[in-house]
Image 1 (cartoon, rainbow, N blue to C red):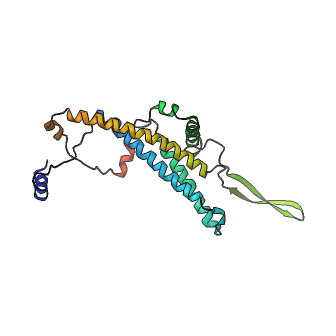
Image 2: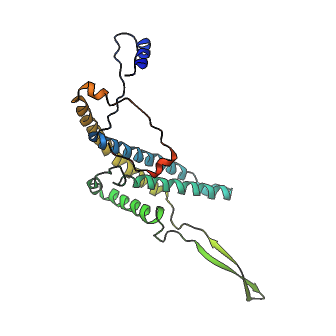
Length: 231
């Protein structure tokens, strides 16, 4: 430990009170704990977003007299649902982080497995990639009519529209799915913590302290181009 830090702690902590410090333990055995914790954070975010959407839908949106405000609110809620679906999609084993075991999905109750497949399809074929016919940006031409006869084409317009939007029921189903997986995940995280603690206790303290202390590296915007390394 840094001498100045140690001196400072001794000045402010009464004698006889044990001190604690966080030591970096980014070693291979801790990788799964790190990955599962990241997934748990994503699922927590999914739950919070869905709860917000469910609360929104308890309000009679049709009673809103300001049409522009109504449309703006619908667009915002639509974007929030998209965000929840994208967050949920991160539970799979892609990139540098391991995903949930596939058997966790296959072991879900039938209605939750159906929800999972629906959300996965929405993510892969509509929200992240424009494949499914769930949006309709229809092109029209304006034809001028005079005395009951078409006389000219004088304009083009496009009607922007999404045929499918996340509903209150969609948000509730996604929240239930995320909550169920997160509950199992929290149990697994505790098991991983126990395994990491056992590994740390098996190391000589002198070797453990050589690993360095708690740090919060601040990435730059350019780091988005880089790959994340495993422990």
